[in-house]
Image (cartoon, rainbow, N blue to C red; front, side, top):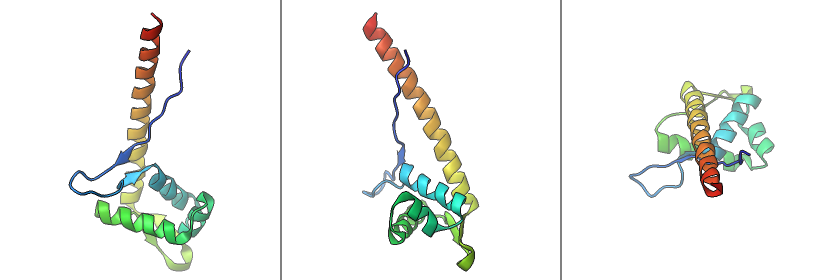
Length: 114
């Protein structure tokens, strides 16, 4: 029997005492922006205030040193190429971590039962 296990990846600066630079919540917000073409609608879909969503994006951009979204006035917002790459790389790393944890957790359970 395979057990469900999960971990959430948070990429954090080693040089500064900062909150997580890039993690699951920020990825969900960026995915929402990509889907909705709007920071406001992405924030609403997550149940967070627009001002908080803006703060999250601004902090991530400042800490990563690149723009993650592009605002186009009434047309809304889209991910920049850097934003798209950040989401894709995060998703890949998260998938690898989930697979490694699942394998190790199953190995642990199997060794206990021996």
